[in-house]
Picture 1 (spheres, rainbow, N blue to C red):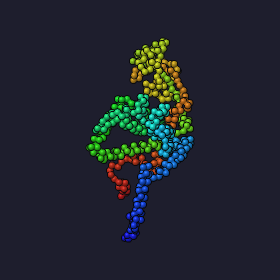
Picture 2: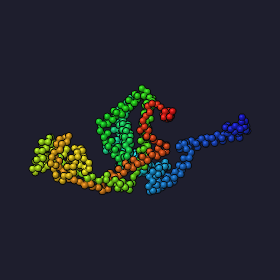
Picture 3: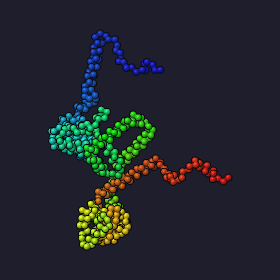
Picture 4: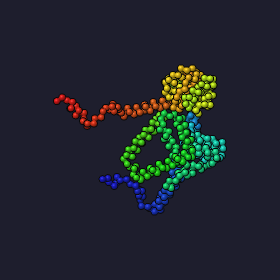
Length: 477
């Protein structure tokens, strides 16, 4: 056990017994020194609980100037994210007015937006707008446009609609967003709360669709929010969300959330959501294509972007065979097929266009629009010359038809520039499928997955005999 002399000593060292007035003076000096230290520490605390900030504040102006130079240099080098970080450090040091701070916040917002950091950019624009107030109307309009663009980029179309409405009415507050749309157990749900839940639901639905480009995902979000803008649809969604929440709470009261079957199902659903989320992130990261990729895909799949050979036809739909034969006789006597289609056909979709059917008859196979597969009719149409009216009516499930061959079309390849957008979409989808397959194959290899599909084709042994027992039964006695 250690001795007392080896123990740490925290008490003040003892002075010798005071000798006259000198001892008293020494004690006063110590007390004054302690008070001085306390005052200095209090000063440091008042400056931000950090003693190092005091000397930094003394040299703050030159340090801020250097940060400003670095930030401008980073901007010129097209490094917007790094420039924004440096500007924020500059704000911590530079003694700026409210107006100057607002302009720097706006500048940081622009850099964040250029870097694709739209949520952070929106925050900076909001700060800049509050700081600048109405001092610069032109800049205020610019900030408003940039806020709208950030919301669009984030896919928050419900918030975007309110933002546009709010600015159109020159309202300083989102009064609509603050309105209460429901109360559940004395908890208020505002329009903003509802839109957040709705946006989350749309995002989940969009991310479950594989093979979509970012542009297609954005278009899908926009269409969904356009449909959900209808007050009746929004009311139905609100009722469904609340009903789901109440049913879930009631299920918990019954202890269903602890049920083994529920927990197993929840695990399976969690696996599916996690797998889908990971795949979505990997596909977006790896599934990019270049212009050269798109052109290569077009050359390898040019038949997909060609107009196939086929025949365009027109028809007159009649109630029965006799009326069809009567109209055919009028056509043979010189009356116009197109005019008779307008006046006599029972097909309201085609009669206005002189009976022309939009879908061509393909050159191969037996398919005929309206009739389905009909080998005899398909051959008659294929062999007829353009302008010929077939010499007899043909029956379908809709009635009896007189048919005129309008024109034959040879296979025609479309120029790349005419179908470039379609080719790019197909290229991205093909690339994303490729990335998905490769990613899963890599995981299979990493985890040593082995599949034995032949087991599915073997007959199940219902006798319960083991392989060893079967072999013994087969051995000669």
